[in-house]
Length: 284
Image 1 (cartoon, rainbow, N blue to C red):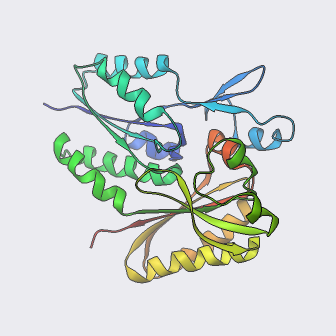
Image 2 (tube, one colour):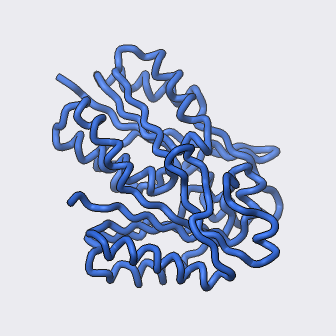
């Protein structure tokens, strides 16, 4: 009989109650300062990252190989026969390839690794939906077949306070940088479904207009079909909560969840001022 494990990484931004409900195994990114290192969401808070950016911008690293190995060893000890791993976009990190190598060392577990080509709750929704299917008793191969469709219904958009941190962290992708900043252009950023890198979905001049435009984009999607709404922020609670309270009133929003702050490691690369919007389209 199949026993299916579900794994992801700490950037998925799923609340603790969801992680517990679906028995999700989370592997943790690392945040590295010159003289110290932290494990994402374990011994560092998002607030600590933001409040110390003026002193030092840390680097980040994917979950340690030891942690990945220990996770798979534990699954073997618990008698798991199969595993589904959903990773942060391979366009932003090497975790997808890293966990693939570790999984090959554990042939007793049949492992399927899915590149979310997303981040934060965009990644988290895929994990959560897999958790629901596992809980329902669906067979491993049938879940695997459904994951691309789940991914195709995820829409992710965000704006940041400044592009400075995306540029410094090498995560700028196809988002216009320096000239746009001089003209006060505030891009609405999405992730390319092909290469999993950031790109400019739309651009407007000024922060206020960019927030209004993101609301327009969301409502246009909501007008077409029933959707779930999820929002996260990066040291930007007020703007994000205000947008969330407005969007959740749309008649086609079936579930609305304010998920709080993004992971500390994501905060390193986005900086303060992030408003993140994820829309999950319901099946017809």
